[in-house]
Image (cartoon, rainbow, N blue to C red; front, side):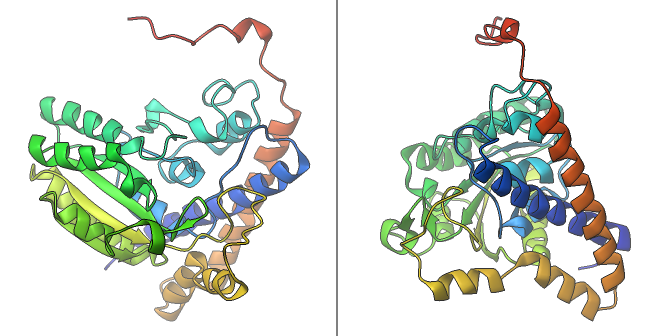
Length: 321
């Protein structure tokens, strides 16, 4: 796969931004500056960036409770995300959504979703809109191995085929639905094969490899943009931490946690591009340093920002048509 140097830098910058952002979220949650729960995307950066890399603001994505990485990969502003997660004035959703409900329609981000399996039917609806408007745009439904068992997801898979809509189901299989192993809870050994059973093509992808995810996503995009209906990707990735920040992970042993860290998508990307002499370590280090400082600055601005005025409490509660 041929990517320009600028594309390679963009991909690494997005993954590095997710990494540093989530590490700061982890720190701030431990400090008590983030209300509610936080579910970080550490270890899955190549999946979100690979899926969203060729999408435009006119393409839609629906996300999950572990949605920060999807937001960043789709172009949401980090400043607004920190403000939102901390419940501050100026957040992308006015500080009312928090970590699990970030949405930005200007970027085609339909929203993170605390409902397991909530994204697939929303994405099918968005894809139906795109089809009736006669565009070549697509909708992407991010969900996990846990969501693959939900009735909402199975109905969405079927409806997508019946209506022949341009939707891509991106199942990020990190091996756990909350604290339960997919080996126990997912009856079919392959989520991709289950999707094929509904009548759509599906691929299994190494989610630690940005290039593998991008290549599979480009096949899916070509299929959907040509009006051939839905496509599914089972993206196998490693979750560095537990279900939520602070999860003691008693259900995972030390060897598994070590293996997850060894499947670091950023380290794999660096190894690939430096070995091929496409980028050098100094260029990647410079991106890392720049991104890290940018994330620090954004977090500090959010910490210093005011809380929303009480006058906003009853605004945007209901949609008025």
